[in-house]
View 1 (cartoon, one colour):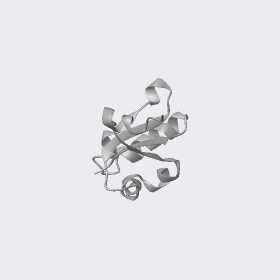
View 2 (spheres, one colour):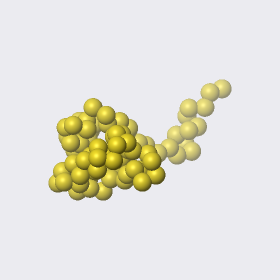
View 3 (tube, helix red, strand yellow):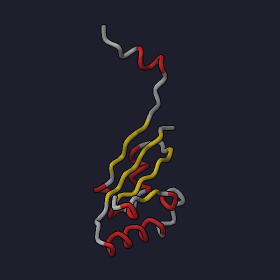
Length: 89
């Protein structure tokens, strides 16, 4: 099952920030409630990493109002053997 990094930016306005956090925390999703937030450090984004079957499944886990801003990245790991196959001669 692929692992995805999801990043969702939001407004710096305190009222908007609190609203977005509340939307996620009350969404009922245990995935979203485990999100990491950068707001206290002035980076108004939330992130979470989770395994999903597809990007479509990721989108369904995000509240509809936040979907257009979401950046979804499938993550992978490389081994030395993987890197060597990409070396050019």
